Length: 175
Image 1 (cartoon, one colour):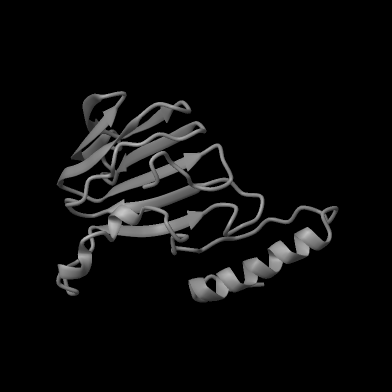
Image 2 (image 1 turned 90 degrees about the vertical axis):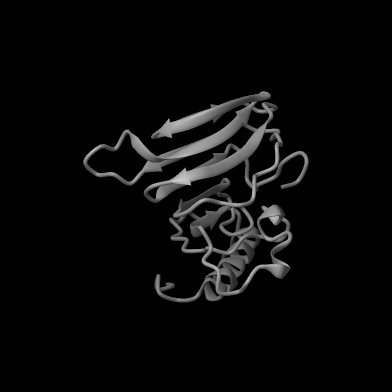
């Protein structure tokens, strides 16, 4: 068993072993798997690091990744990730679509008023710009173009979650 305090690398190594075991014995009884991975698989959200070579290394990152999981991390799982956004994000998530349904959520951190997002977030859905100011989930059916995600004003940390009805994250074009 892996302790939650072990590194993400150790978790990935252990999960590869789990994948090998499942492949060797597909009739093995299902087991719950705890995942504490924060590392993105290769080529997932590449736009986040594009152009950061000139960024000062001591500049705080406004995105605090909490968890990332898909079939590459935990065999048999679907894609889900969560982040805290703690400041304006200078990069805009490119417009894209998925071949599978997606749910994107934005949750405010004001415990006295959970509806209050404490932020202004621009999001383009089917070519229409929407400004999000309330805690919400957004259901995006397969094929619906979305993106242009811009955290332009953050008064308090925002919890963002995304999940696809698919085993790995993929988008057209790749993001």
